[in-house]
Length: 221
Image 1: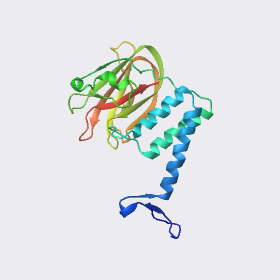
Image 2 (image 1 turned 60 degrees about the vertical axis):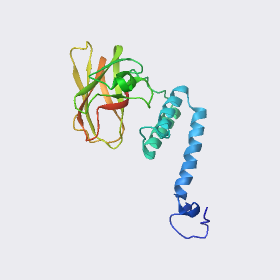
Image 3 (image 1 turned 120 degrees about the vertical axis):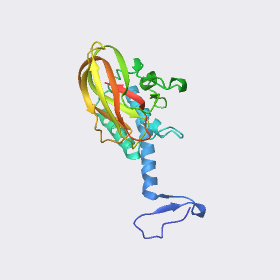
Image 4 (image 1 turned 30 degrees about the horizontal axis):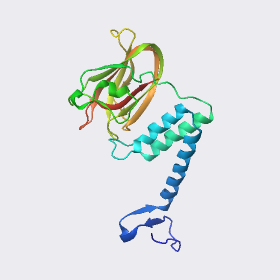
């Protein structure tokens, strides 16, 4: 490692042997701080918030199929910290392990619709072709009061246009979220929903080139 103490520069780098790699000192310091913060949170959080923290950390598992940016992950950890300090408990994911249906799936590859609600961010549902208007439906088991939703898409930095509809009887549907002209490209997206429903249907109505209707998790609160 090169000794940088004698350099008068605004940005300092640690340079590894033969200049094959380097890291900014500021980024190294931030990484150490984040590591210590994670260890502290793991020791003081309730079980519910530990689960939420672990879901964020899982986005950085090597060879995973997706990753959140560092800033997004930090923002989620800050949000968890704030709720913990306020004495809040995480909302219950009403869709977790509930019955699902879908317009199609790559079932032979294990990408069934139930993978979108299994709480596992390494499994996913995927439609069987690249066409639009594929849908995923969740049966909450009984009528529930709804407040928010979140989606973890297959890809980051891609646009997925979608709508969310709800129903009490699986026959009559009400549009409650319209993102048919979605401008958000982050992999993790969330929003507010209001009303009562037993059935919630997510329909993908527009896809960027190279994308299929595919997502890791669809959560409903």
